[in-house]
Image 1 (tube, helix red, strand yellow):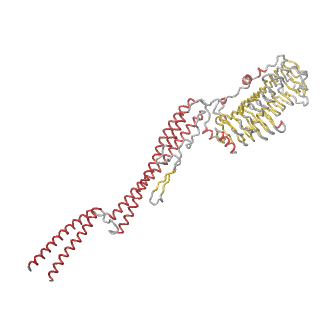
Image 2 (cartoon, one colour; image 1 turned 90 degrees about the horizontal axis):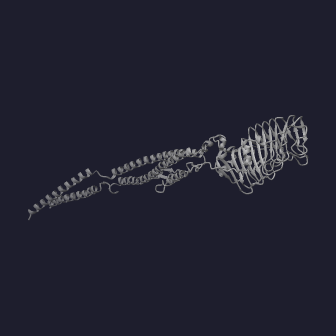
Image 3 (cartoon, one colour; image 1 turned 30 degrees about the vertical axis):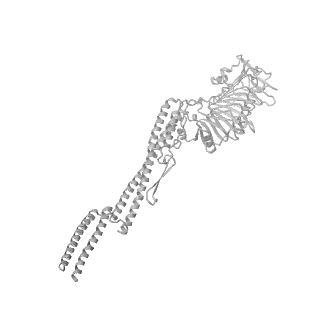
Length: 638
């Protein structure tokens, strides 16, 4: 009985061994098929969850790698766009350089002008001009090209309106590089108001289309200089200059005024006329051609000339209505009557004093005017003074009394009757009757009649022959810059096309690159506008050579800005690529770490599986032997 139990235990032991081996083999086969020694939390909870965490992080970083790759492509699209943009701008520069030799107009460029210390602003539009004036800043406001003014210009003390010729880069001022044109902008009483110390230089002022009452108002206690200025005024019933008390208005250089249908060219407002002074000196020339005036060129103010200055007046009406004139140092006053006018050039209380080889030439109409209510004489202070009365009517005009003459001994007056010389000093002598003959103590010393032509300059004769020729603004350059503008447009089109997946870093778009799975590491790339306007292309139309120079400067600076932008984008691209490489390597580290926790050593598992197969075979053989032994023992009892 006990023997049978022993045999059963042996067989049972073999069967248990086979079952354990089968279980181990099943587990080993699973490891071999998956390659993992930990497939679930039951296998090894700690390793399973650690590996799972590492794997999830690696997956998150892998998705960020895709985002980085797309960001890199967006940057590359912008960089490539800029490189192509540079080629377009270089082509535009070649167009400009080709055009420069064809431009004979050499005036300063805006860039050069802005670098001058005296310049407050360089303007080429009404908006820019208005902004500069309203800023209250002091200095030269440089007029670049032709500006159509739309409102009153109210200049502050110390503000000057100057044309580009003021900077000595051109010898062609007749072309009028700089011009202000005033149109009809309502009921404004003035087009320009000057308040204090102001200068207008090398500029053409066109008031011919405005209905404002006064063209230029000079406020009280102001000191204004006009230098190389051309002025045109038509169809206006007011004043060209409306001058208030305590004003000095000085002309220097050569100035031309063409006026039609005004009341006065120089009119006054308030106070004594003696407080309003017109000054010419230093070889200054003021040429005034006035037709259709309802009154006179000058209205009750002082005219002071010296230093070879010249005042030429062409008028169909009066030249001076009252006021005083002081003429020194070879100064010349030439008054030429135009049309069929028979009036007198000097009327009502005008007194003129002539010194030091100064000259007065009157031609046409009547000559010197007399008004006996006030004795305002014509004073000849030097025997070197020239008084030439080449009149078509009487040389001495009498209304209620003749003109009054004061003269030093030896002074001469030439009329159509000849040259008369004072034989003694004469004080306030009335000339009667009217005519061309001077009474004693003047004596006829030469019967040659007055001839104004001998004393008029070629410029004066030219203005006399064409006294009312309207100034025409010539085009500064006929250079066609269509191809240049088309290239700028093509550049802008190219910049607009530099987007990648809806992002364009050459506009104001932003690009965010996330560097880690918690999104705490974010790299933002701000787009920079690289359009023509943003790069500072102010010069679109070529007017002068200066504009061409500006275009070259703008292209050069634009290419520099693009190169800088390229460099910035390149640096940001390098940062992203470095982070991309790091993230890629980190993913490998995480994945390897996870694998180390769950993957099996296939050599070890294979050897283990082979061992299990051997043990299984041995267990089977053992079980077979045990079964045979049991059968033999049982046979003894049968």
